[in-house]
Amino acid sequence: MSDFGKFVDAFTPAEVAEKVKTVGVDKANMSIIPLVILSLMAGAFISFAAMYYTVVMTDAGAAYGLARLVGGLVFALGFILVVIAGAELFTGNTLVVMAYAKGQVSFKSLMRNWGIVYVGNLVGALVTVYLVYLSGYLSDGNLGVGVTAIKTGLAKVDHTTTEAFVRGLFCNVLVCLGSWMVYASRSVTDKVMAVLFPISGFVAMGFEHCVANMYMIPIAMIAATDQAIVAAGHFDAAQLATLDFGGLMGNIIPVTLGNIVGGAGFVAMAYYLVYVYARPNR
Image (cartoon, rainbow, N blue to C red; front, side, top):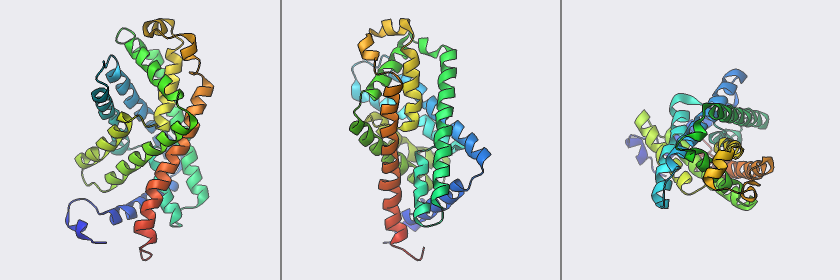
């Protein structure tokens, strides 16, 4: 493979692979307190993006494609905060598999990182859900925000297990490719642009992100308990029946597994085989 890329501004893919391995080791060995705090922050950051998305998608009208594009662009806020401000996001941390494959990280350390970050993201998202409920945000836009929250949650829990898994896989392929390009970037502007299109793309195409759903489905469940919001959206009991704990788990579990396969398998291991395994001297 040519090293021509070394003469341009961005880091080459081979150099990025080295960075991903190094960062993976650091993430796997991070002490508990910063890991927990940064995980909580990531759950909140992604929730902020979901809140922004919900507002923008309220009364979006019939322009489906354009509305999805705009919704995707604003959703990138959460990932920009994770990348620039700093936080530990479960989906991005599936790239730590590259360091594990190289033997630089033990399986126990990998599982420790994933477990703590996943739970931290969940708690951060759920705390945000509770605070959003207290804020009265769901009543904004003449209850339109609450109606949109319910519609978004219903769309997610209505996926079959296979659909949720595959959409989760596609989602984290794009998320991790965005992370990969962030590692290739040198400036804040570069990093923002690297994140913008993969993230807006997965949102616009309706793919599924487990941490985003840790906010989006619970907030829909809460909105569905408000009779004024339910009446404003003309929902009936049969429609709302799937917005329960079973519906939440029926989405989160396959989406999480799809996110792992997409990020760890289709991105981390693919690039490991190309830039690390095929170059044993590295």
